[in-house]
Structure formats: C-alpha cells, structure tokens
Image 1 (cartoon, rainbow, N blue to C red):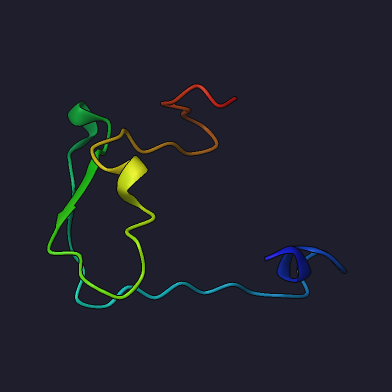
Image 2 (image 1 turned 60 degrees about the vertical axis):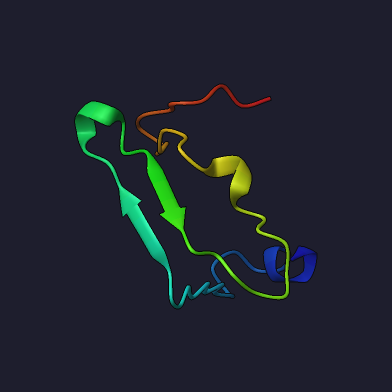
Length: 66
C-alpha cells in the first residue's frame, strides 16, 4: 500500500473488486448504511468494522475520524 501511494500524484490506480458480494446500501434517510451477508474466504473479514455504519463522503462526514 505504501508503494502504491507514494510517487507522482495520479500515477497509479488501485482497483478493488468484490465478487460474490451480497451487500446493500440503505437510503439517504438512513445515511446510506452498508450491510452485507455471506462473506466467505481465506482472509479475515476486514470490512466488519464498517458494517452498518453510515457512509461518509468528502462533503458529508458521518463518523468522527481520529
């Protein structure tokens, strides 16, 4: 990750592809909360801390960052 984020700005692209992903994004009234089921794989579910959390964007921070 460090090597991907150093160097000339805009010179690299990171693509994350999720397959067999059973996820839903809630409506605006629910602050676009993301939820999913059926995760399986040989790696830990590193997204678990984001489950059912409101979605943040640059213009609308939903969670206080430390």
